[in-house]
Length: 238
Image (cartoon, rainbow, N blue to C red; front, side, top):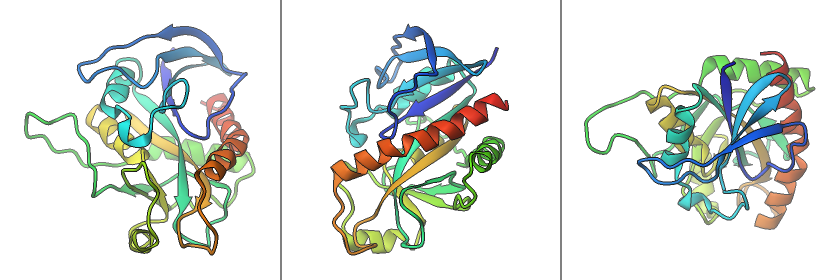
Protein backbone atom coordinates (compact mmCIF):
# COMPACT_ATOMS: atom_id res chain seq x y z
CA UNK A 1 0.00 0.00 0.00
CA UNK A 2 1.42 3.36 -1.04
CA UNK A 3 1.64 5.91 1.77
CA UNK A 4 0.75 9.58 1.65
CA UNK A 5 2.70 12.12 3.68
CA UNK A 6 1.00 14.74 5.84
CA UNK A 7 2.88 17.70 7.28
CA UNK A 8 0.89 19.16 10.16
CA UNK A 9 1.27 22.68 11.49
CA UNK A 10 -0.27 25.23 13.84
CA UNK A 11 -3.86 24.12 13.33
CA UNK A 12 -3.12 20.47 14.14
CA UNK A 13 -4.66 19.29 17.41
CA UNK A 14 -5.63 15.70 18.17
CA UNK A 15 -6.36 13.10 15.51
CA UNK A 16 -7.77 10.20 17.49
CA UNK A 17 -8.88 8.38 14.33
CA UNK A 18 -5.27 8.14 13.13
CA UNK A 19 -3.87 4.84 14.42
CA UNK A 20 -0.10 5.27 14.83
CA UNK A 21 1.69 1.96 14.28
CA UNK A 22 5.33 3.05 14.16
CA UNK A 23 7.44 6.08 15.06
CA UNK A 24 10.46 6.44 12.78
CA UNK A 25 13.42 8.55 13.90
CA UNK A 26 15.20 9.91 10.82
CA UNK A 27 18.58 11.53 10.19
CA UNK A 28 19.34 13.10 6.82
CA UNK A 29 22.27 14.82 5.07
CA UNK A 30 20.44 18.04 5.97
CA UNK A 31 20.12 17.25 9.66
CA UNK A 32 17.26 15.99 11.79
CA UNK A 33 13.63 16.56 10.76
CA UNK A 34 11.26 18.57 12.93
CA UNK A 35 9.74 15.40 14.33
CA UNK A 36 9.78 11.64 13.94
CA UNK A 37 7.71 10.23 11.09
CA UNK A 38 4.54 8.79 12.59
CA UNK A 39 3.33 5.93 10.41
CA UNK A 40 -0.17 4.54 10.66
CA UNK A 41 -3.48 4.03 8.93
CA UNK A 42 -6.62 6.09 8.55
CA UNK A 43 -9.70 4.93 6.65
CA UNK A 44 -7.65 2.17 5.06
CA UNK A 45 -4.94 4.52 3.82
CA UNK A 46 -1.33 4.41 4.97
CA UNK A 47 -0.36 7.85 6.32
CA UNK A 48 3.03 9.17 7.39
CA UNK A 49 2.67 12.23 9.60
CA UNK A 50 5.39 14.82 10.34
CA UNK A 51 4.93 17.64 12.86
CA UNK A 52 6.30 20.77 11.19
CA UNK A 53 6.89 22.71 14.42
CA UNK A 54 8.06 19.68 16.39
CA UNK A 55 6.21 17.23 18.68
CA UNK A 56 5.84 19.99 21.29
CA UNK A 57 5.14 22.77 18.76
CA UNK A 58 8.23 24.70 19.85
CA UNK A 59 10.11 25.21 16.56
CA UNK A 60 9.48 28.73 15.19
CA UNK A 61 8.82 29.06 11.45
CA UNK A 62 12.22 30.56 10.56
CA UNK A 63 14.00 27.64 12.30
CA UNK A 64 12.14 24.79 10.61
CA UNK A 65 14.53 22.44 8.82
CA UNK A 66 12.45 22.10 5.66
CA UNK A 67 15.23 20.31 3.76
CA UNK A 68 15.47 17.58 6.39
CA UNK A 69 11.68 17.30 6.58
CA UNK A 70 11.16 16.85 2.84
CA UNK A 71 14.26 14.67 2.41
CA UNK A 72 13.00 12.30 5.11
CA UNK A 73 9.50 12.16 3.65
CA UNK A 74 10.60 11.64 0.04
CA UNK A 75 12.26 8.40 1.10
CA UNK A 76 8.83 7.16 2.24
CA UNK A 77 6.19 8.78 0.01
CA UNK A 78 5.70 10.33 -3.42
CA UNK A 79 2.89 12.72 -2.43
CA UNK A 80 2.46 15.11 0.49
CA UNK A 81 -0.40 17.19 1.88
CA UNK A 82 0.63 20.24 3.88
CA UNK A 83 -1.69 21.47 6.64
CA UNK A 84 -0.86 25.15 6.93
CA UNK A 85 -2.07 28.29 8.67
CA UNK A 86 -2.30 31.68 6.97
CA UNK A 87 -3.64 35.18 7.32
CA UNK A 88 -6.00 36.79 4.84
CA UNK A 89 -4.71 39.70 2.76
CA UNK A 90 -8.26 40.65 1.78
CA UNK A 91 -11.26 41.77 3.79
CA UNK A 92 -13.43 39.82 1.33
CA UNK A 93 -12.07 36.45 2.52
CA UNK A 94 -13.93 35.05 5.50
CA UNK A 95 -12.06 34.30 8.73
CA UNK A 96 -11.95 31.56 9.86
CA UNK A 97 -12.20 29.57 6.65
CA UNK A 98 -10.32 27.05 4.52
CA UNK A 99 -8.44 27.34 1.24
CA UNK A 100 -6.76 24.96 -1.20
CA UNK A 101 -4.27 27.42 -2.79
CA UNK A 102 -3.66 27.42 -6.51
CA UNK A 103 -0.19 29.00 -6.52
CA UNK A 104 2.35 30.78 -4.36
CA UNK A 105 4.89 33.61 -4.24
CA UNK A 106 8.21 33.38 -2.39
CA UNK A 107 10.63 36.07 -3.57
CA UNK A 108 12.25 36.71 -0.20
CA UNK A 109 13.47 33.43 1.27
CA UNK A 110 13.67 30.81 -1.48
CA UNK A 111 15.07 27.40 -0.57
CA UNK A 112 16.64 24.57 -2.57
CA UNK A 113 18.35 21.21 -2.35
CA UNK A 114 20.70 22.34 -5.14
CA UNK A 115 23.30 24.53 -3.49
CA UNK A 116 26.27 22.85 -5.18
CA UNK A 117 25.13 22.47 -8.79
CA UNK A 118 23.06 24.29 -11.37
CA UNK A 119 19.57 22.79 -11.57
CA UNK A 120 16.34 24.67 -12.17
CA UNK A 121 12.79 23.48 -11.56
CA UNK A 122 9.50 25.20 -12.31
CA UNK A 123 7.58 25.36 -9.03
CA UNK A 124 3.94 24.31 -8.96
CA UNK A 125 1.34 22.70 -6.74
CA UNK A 126 -0.04 19.31 -7.74
CA UNK A 127 -3.15 19.78 -9.87
CA UNK A 128 -4.27 16.21 -9.19
CA UNK A 129 -3.99 16.47 -5.40
CA UNK A 130 -5.64 19.90 -5.46
CA UNK A 131 -8.53 18.49 -7.44
CA UNK A 132 -9.03 15.66 -4.96
CA UNK A 133 -8.84 18.05 -2.00
CA UNK A 134 -11.29 20.48 -3.61
CA UNK A 135 -13.74 17.65 -4.21
CA UNK A 136 -13.40 16.50 -0.59
CA UNK A 137 -13.84 20.09 0.62
CA UNK A 138 -17.05 20.51 -1.33
CA UNK A 139 -18.37 17.21 0.04
CA UNK A 140 -17.53 18.50 3.52
CA UNK A 141 -19.76 21.52 2.88
CA UNK A 142 -17.20 24.13 1.90
CA UNK A 143 -18.52 25.70 -1.28
CA UNK A 144 -16.52 28.95 -1.31
CA UNK A 145 -12.89 27.88 -0.94
CA UNK A 146 -11.12 30.77 -2.69
CA UNK A 147 -9.81 27.97 -4.90
CA UNK A 148 -7.76 30.39 -7.02
CA UNK A 149 -6.02 31.82 -3.95
CA UNK A 150 -2.32 32.69 -4.12
CA UNK A 151 -0.25 32.10 -0.97
CA UNK A 152 2.54 34.60 -0.26
CA UNK A 153 5.35 33.43 2.03
CA UNK A 154 7.28 35.62 4.44
CA UNK A 155 10.08 34.42 6.70
CA UNK A 156 8.82 35.10 10.20
CA UNK A 157 8.89 34.77 13.09
CA UNK A 158 7.34 38.22 13.36
CA UNK A 159 4.11 39.11 11.64
CA UNK A 160 4.02 41.70 8.86
CA UNK A 161 3.74 45.48 9.14
CA UNK A 162 0.73 47.27 7.70
CA UNK A 163 2.89 48.65 4.90
CA UNK A 164 4.20 45.18 4.08
CA UNK A 165 0.69 43.75 4.04
CA UNK A 166 -0.42 46.46 1.64
CA UNK A 167 2.40 45.49 -0.74
CA UNK A 168 1.85 41.74 -0.30
CA UNK A 169 -1.83 42.11 -1.16
CA UNK A 170 -0.74 43.09 -4.69
CA UNK A 171 0.89 39.66 -5.02
CA UNK A 172 -1.61 37.30 -3.42
CA UNK A 173 -4.53 36.52 -1.18
CA UNK A 174 -3.02 34.70 1.81
CA UNK A 175 0.17 35.20 3.81
CA UNK A 176 2.04 32.50 5.72
CA UNK A 177 5.54 31.32 6.59
CA UNK A 178 5.96 27.69 5.52
CA UNK A 179 3.96 26.34 2.57
CA UNK A 180 6.06 27.71 -0.28
CA UNK A 181 9.27 26.21 1.08
CA UNK A 182 7.67 22.78 1.33
CA UNK A 183 6.12 23.02 -2.13
CA UNK A 184 9.40 24.03 -3.78
CA UNK A 185 11.46 21.31 -2.12
CA UNK A 186 8.82 18.70 -2.94
CA UNK A 187 8.95 19.75 -6.57
CA UNK A 188 12.74 19.36 -6.56
CA UNK A 189 12.36 15.93 -4.96
CA UNK A 190 9.70 14.82 -7.50
CA UNK A 191 7.08 14.58 -4.74
CA UNK A 192 3.58 15.86 -5.50
CA UNK A 193 2.44 18.52 -3.02
CA UNK A 194 -0.76 20.40 -2.25
CA UNK A 195 -1.96 22.17 0.86
CA UNK A 196 -5.05 22.63 2.97
CA UNK A 197 -4.76 26.10 4.50
CA UNK A 198 -6.56 27.22 7.64
CA UNK A 199 -7.24 30.96 7.30
CA UNK A 200 -7.05 32.13 10.88
CA UNK A 201 -6.77 35.92 10.93
CA UNK A 202 -6.82 39.08 8.88
CA UNK A 203 -3.31 40.32 8.19
CA UNK A 204 -2.15 43.48 9.90
CA UNK A 205 -4.16 46.49 8.71
CA UNK A 206 -6.69 44.58 6.59
CA UNK A 207 -9.30 45.30 9.24
CA UNK A 208 -9.33 47.71 12.14
CA UNK A 209 -8.34 45.16 14.75
CA UNK A 210 -5.11 44.13 16.42
CA UNK A 211 -3.45 40.93 15.23
CA UNK A 212 -2.71 38.73 18.24
CA UNK A 213 -0.65 35.55 17.89
CA UNK A 214 -2.41 33.68 20.68
CA UNK A 215 -5.76 34.38 19.04
CA UNK A 216 -4.36 33.09 15.73
CA UNK A 217 -3.33 29.82 17.40
CA UNK A 218 -6.72 29.47 19.09
CA UNK A 219 -8.58 30.08 15.81
CA UNK A 220 -6.32 27.64 13.96
CA UNK A 221 -6.98 24.90 16.49
CA UNK A 222 -10.72 25.62 16.44
CA UNK A 223 -10.57 25.28 12.64
CA UNK A 224 -8.82 21.89 12.92
CA UNK A 225 -12.12 20.00 12.97
CA UNK A 226 -12.92 21.44 9.53
CA UNK A 227 -9.47 20.57 8.19
CA UNK A 228 -9.68 17.07 9.67
CA UNK A 229 -13.08 16.48 8.08
CA UNK A 230 -11.74 17.44 4.65
CA UNK A 231 -8.69 15.18 5.04
CA UNK A 232 -10.73 12.21 6.17
CA UNK A 233 -13.12 12.52 3.20
CA UNK A 234 -10.08 12.90 0.93
CA UNK A 235 -8.55 9.70 2.32
CA UNK A 236 -11.80 7.71 2.17
CA UNK A 237 -12.19 8.43 -1.54
CA UNK A 238 -8.68 7.60 -2.67
